[in-house]
Image (cartoon, rainbow, N blue to C red; front, side, top):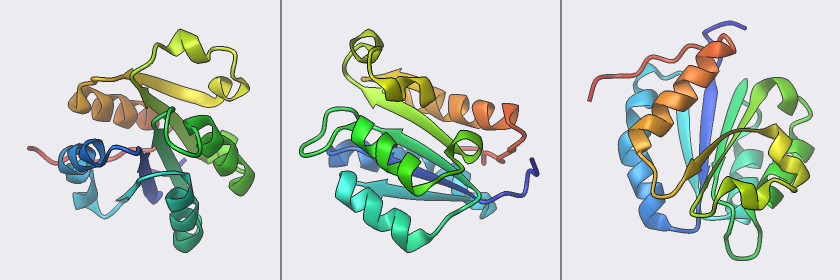
Length: 145
């Protein structure tokens, strides 16, 4: 894969404080104009933004699991429905206060690349995502703090 691919990172969480924190910490990735950060307060907001933005080359989804109306697994299912290239170009991550073992029976877990237990270290999350993308040939410059 080329390192010039456009990457959209979508954060989905019903807690606005968490979305604000993600924006503050991850905005260093936007400096290269290769990365677009998108923040959604839930399932409907995400679907609307996905449809507005079309299909970027690479899509990273970081979702909470327990949210009003729809779960993070509903988010993953919908993205897989909208993006038929999800196996190659979509990377799913979960950020949850619950242990990963509680979700091991959900069939969508097989598509989850990373799991971050709240409270999590946002810088470690960013390093993990950037590293995972690099392992798939997608290199992102991270600006200094």
